[in-house]
Length: 187
Image (cartoon, rainbow, N blue to C red; front, side, top):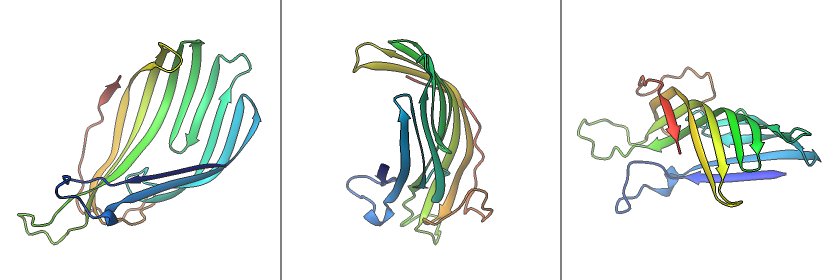
């Protein structure tokens, strides 16, 4: 069994004026897995996530696979991420794949100058990152990772409060934005 738990308190606040802990967003996953051999582990489960920017409950399919010659493999937790791994040698590997990212940020609207009646606004962010990664080991514990890719922003919208919004839900947002889809680089 694999268990994962996380908590985020995201928003526009300072330590002197911290948000209420009621704005904490919790995510969790449970996966029942089996290890067929040293090269293959797979499982199925469920997750409570903010992957699409809003609260979602999704099934999870998990696979970690390395080929017999140990030159390539697959690393995936569907629907969150997928990577094809190529082991170049002991110190270098390359990865090609995608990852879905998302989160929610509380917008502190108390005393707003526009007189808006909403104090429970949240910015919902969701994006798909298609990427290529190269990793190099300087020592067994110290690695360098370089990543380049394309970021598709499918949601960067303002919503009211924390509620379940499944993928494909057409409930209108409080405010919608239209962002571009840039290339990116991480080191």
